[in-house]
Amino acid sequence: MLYAVVLAAALGGPDPQSIFAHAALAWEARPSPAYVTWTLDVRLAAGGAQQRTCALTPGTAGPGCAAPDGSPLFFDETRDPFSAPAGTYAVQLAGMQTVDGAQVYDLKIAAPPANPAAAPLREAWIGTDDYEVRRLLYGGTAYTFARYGVQRIWWTQQAQGVWGTAQSVGVAFEGPKTIASVRVTPLCSAVRSTVLPFLSIERSNESLISRMDDNVARFVEAAQLASDPGSPGLILSRANLDWYAAQMYENLARADLLLKASYEKMPQGRDAPLDALRLRVQTLVDVQRIAVNQYASLAAPRMTSYRYWNSMVAEVARLREIDGGSKEEPPPQAYAGVWLFQQLTGERRNLRAPIMAAADYCGIRAP
Image 1 (cartoon, rainbow, N blue to C red):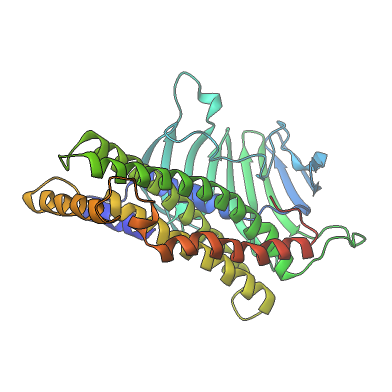
Image 2 (cartoon, helix red, strand yellow):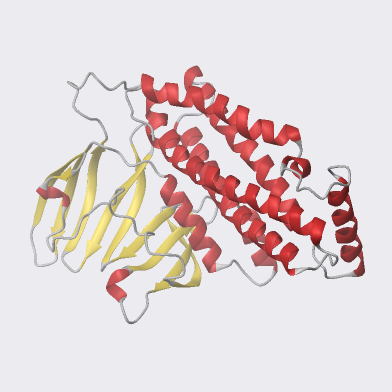
């Protein structure tokens, strides 16, 4: 994660788009609590003060959860400041500041002039060491965030707009005590906040792996038929592999952030079942990283020098000899190695089974 920022700094400063992208990943990794009891001290710009209580339950928010102008005072899975499509915003690094003792990047964000309402994010203050969002200017309201509770969940500390300010006095994330059908343990909390998002990532990776398999087969076929290592068929196969690998690397970075957030919330060694579950998730991430590294290595050689050209010639010759000189298309396993594909088939099934079992134990429906 830090490599891109360090490299950008060596070339003249941190890259604003890279900072913005990492902040979006960190935001996505934040757990969204189902139940919140929130006490607020509201000071109106027109004069007057009031203390109100906001109650959040799944799918509903009490009247005290909105500002006087009707805008929500909080963010959850239905209100994501980073939900605009990639490339919507123009991002500029305005400088460095300090927010609540943390050094932050100050990003100025501009939406398309033709449709500013579709992208209401205007400014973001992002931690330099963890990319966590400390403050946002969103839709005319400035939000400052802090961690609350034993769960250390990020929540609105203060909201300020033309209507006035709302300051958090107390935040609790406990649901009704009468619900007995859902297990409340560190393991089940991790299933909700870490495993379910990870399974969504894993489904996306499964599709990408299938597409990369198809491209490996096309690459092998093109390598057998091509007399020129720089033929369009080989170049197109490499380009496709590189594109799919880039998407999978991004997914694995999201998975790393989910695990990081889980260990921050509950350090290793405090709950054995949770540690075992996280180890299985990490192993599944590692297995997929082995696969994408293998695919990326196939897409890596470039024809930028005589040395690279020779390496491509040798690679084509080797691929033609894989199946004993036959002109039949060898399976993708011939290039990537039998062990790798065994890992991606049997091991992925073996690793997913206990993860799904944990979700069933917690009474949570997994995708």
